[in-house]
Structures are given as C-alpha cells and as structure tokens.
Length: 169
Image (cartoon, rainbow, N blue to C red; front, side):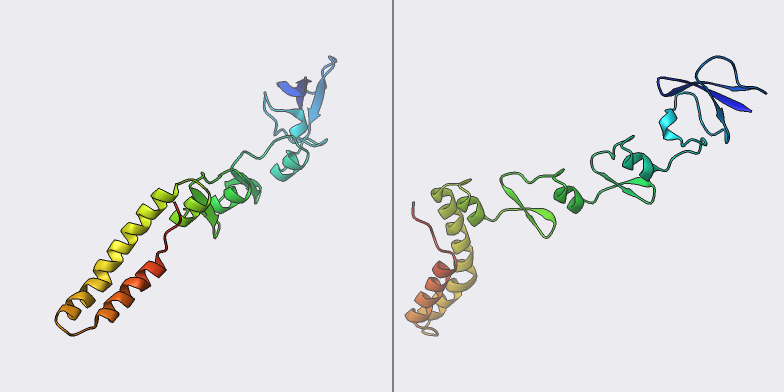
C-alpha cells in the first residue's frame, strides 16, 4: 500500500508499507497518483486527481491572464477575447472596431482632441491635393483645350472641398 505524509496541505513523503505509520499526517493513497510536493486538496478523498475545471471552480488555481479554460486545459484567448476581457486595451490613438484594435481616423483624432485643428486641416489639404491631381487636373487641361467648361472644373474642385471639409482653427 502507498501512504502519503501530508504537512501544511503538501505531500511531503510517499512510502510503500503494509500498514499505515503511527505518526500523525499519513493518508492511504488508493490509486498512487500523487507525487511529493503536490497539494493534498488537488485530490479528492479517494486520491483521484481533480479535474482542471474543478480546481478552478474550487478556486484552488487561477486561470492565467490571457487564457481560458477549454476542454480541461488552458488555451490562449484570441485577441478579440482579450479585448473583451480588458486585457488588451487600445491606446488613445486607437479604437475597437469589429473586435479588433484599429487606428482612429484623423477626424476621430481631432474630435477626441488628440490633434489640433491645424494638424487636422493640414491632413485635409493633403487629401484634397491628391484628389485634385487625380480628378480636377485633367478637367482643367480639357478646359484649356475647350473640351470642358470652367464650370465643370470648378464643380469638380468644389466636390473635393465638400468631400474633405476643413474645421475652424
């Protein structure tokens, strides 16, 4: 028979003997699964090792941060689960969208007072400039060759200004 010596809830010694020692703190291990250094409360009264879910339920062990209990083992959470649990948090320049951390738009940065009106308007100028090159420049050249009107060109420029409005500084 196997006997375990328990001190302060820790298995300190394991012996094989025909009878239980007289000394206090020895328990008969019916299934001989324990090892020196293990906690007694990780086993039931019949020395069957408790499942991981039972150990967690009984608050004998904690689920590590960033992990979840799944099929009797700890599995790392997805980033979305970590965000939901508050383990991963966005910076002031980020937000949560569709369960992911993404960069805020320039408008959101301005609205949240992370960038100034001047910085926002500089960004708008860059957007407008790119759009002008992509759209209105060709209309301007057509206008120069009488293939488009000045009104066509001005309408195209106004559409870009409407698409990328500036804010008051």
